Length: 132
Image 1 (cartoon, one colour):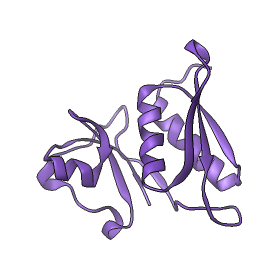
Image 2 (spheres, helix red, strand yellow):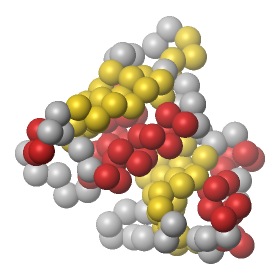
Image 3 (tube, one colour):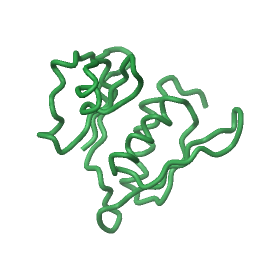
Image 4 (tube, helix red, strand yellow):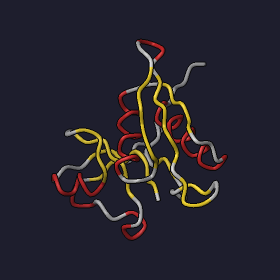
């Protein structure tokens, strides 16, 4: 199955696995998907991220994290920038997501990072998604 928007596919697979109460989910490998998953792990929204396989059979295995029985740690994962509508922000205009409860993930010239990291490094970029 060909996927045109790998970022949306990644976010949807993680969101659906959390809502269904699955322990793990597999995502087709891409550097961007791996970066997003690792940021979610670092920020405490998922339990573990591993890259398995080689070549075209590479996949990212994400172990989900729950706050209660089948209740994921995150409330929502929303895509901000889409292929038809890109959303950019300068480092001066980066605002806290949900009064600091959530995070925004950005692509910047220095790589994929959270809104707090981008503000600290003084770089802006494209807002990929928000998680809270």
